[in-house]
Image (cartoon, rainbow, N blue to C red; front, side, top):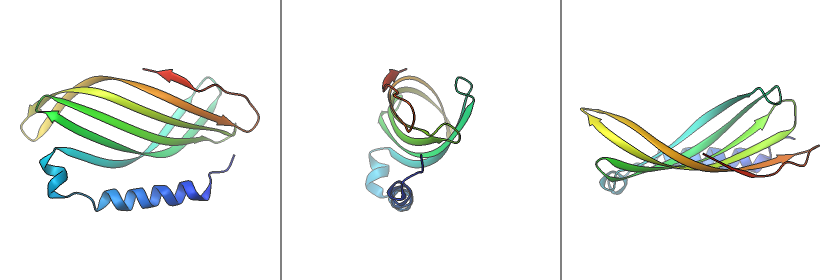
Length: 124
C-alpha cells in the first residue's frame, strides 16, 4: 500500500501550520502543539513501520494535563497502514524549567491492509 499524496500534503500543511501557531492565546491557556515522526518495530509480523503524527497537550491546572495524539504509520513489507488515535491524562510535577510527568492513556487503532482483513481495536 502506497501512502496517498493527500496524506503527505496534509502532514506538510499541519507541520507548517503548527510551526507558526504559537500565539499569546495558546500560551495563556497552556496549550502545546507539535508534530513528530514515528517508528514501530513489530516483532509479531516481522516488519517495521514508519510515519508521522501530531499532538495537542492542554494543561488544565498546574499539576494535570490532557494529551491528544494522532498518527499515521505504514509497514514496509506487509502493506499494512495504522492510524492510532490516543488520549492520555498526565500528572505533572514542575521542577524549575522542566516538568516530570506520568500518566495513563487509551487509544483506538485503525488498521488497513491490501491482503488481509484486520480488525480495528482499543488499547491502553
